[in-house]
Length: 469
Image (cartoon, rainbow, N blue to C red; front, side, top):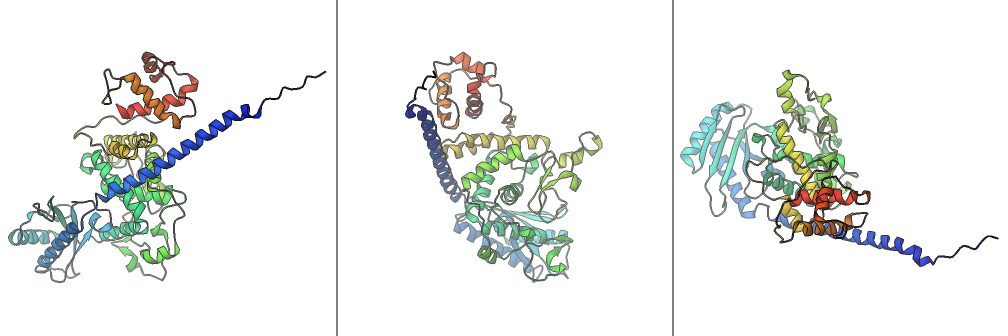
């Protein structure tokens, strides 16, 4: 005779499920709080970086003064701002870039204009003047000492007939206008971050600010789904247009520039916050972008280096120069045969990827927002070029320093506090002092003793220690 099954109270079975459900709810709530807090911190951070109205007014006065002086040499010429000063991505106290457009029947060459204008500015103004008439692109470099309106002074470059740069400025300005809250916040923060982490110097083998702007726009158009921005270069014109209207110097410069009309008929369905976009940006460029074979193109999406003749031939020493130019590839939107990241060296790419990984790990830890921004933008010592953090998929072998940390906690106490702080992120219970001695913690971190149930915890802990040390 079969025995009746013993009924188990439903509450006993439900407890683990209810507990897990409540825990997931708490974790989701903490995540939402972190995202909201980080977004607000980013806005507050960026607002402090924007040029003041007084600074913008002084710069406009300088532009008008220079334009009047140029008229004495070339009547009818125009002096226009380009670059960050005009595209919406300018930081406070940033340099000015000016382009002089001259009538087609100009009397002087660019080199002669640089020489004549340099002499005139030295006589008529208080600028420190450095003419470069024999440079690949002749320019006049100017600087002005600090004043009440410009506490940091001013630096300015004047070039001639660079119409592609003016169109490029308009393109980036249009992208900034479509979604200024998210696009400008991301770009301005990343410009400061890259400068403070010493990966924003083409002369030292890293990437220019312009390169980072293109990485952001490429990410928002071609990586995010749904996209945050439309592809302005692929939108058809509303009327028939001639080649003269769409080409400059043989380059196709067409893009849809009626942003007011665009915003009446197009709106992104992507509702992610600026914090979520920043987290995904660092994650994408730290582990998903194909540096070996890929080309980031805001015009056409992800391209192959081979399709542009930019592949790295590591086996042929004759192509050393080409290899160095194409370790990191970002296509210019108009001059499509030009690699904006051509200046990035092997060591420079090593540092850039390392900083993307470091930033991704900091945000994965979800510290308080102010602490996160402080850690992200911590000034790297000049000349320092440490090895980048190891891949997220290859846990590092770390040892703990002796002595106390800045918090006053012992290494063991700090380790345990870090693990307990990670608990909301982990699917397994956190480590406890009864499970591990300090020695066994160190061995576990080195990968020598790794209980299967704690694998995820230790992986996260390694990341925490990499940041803390």
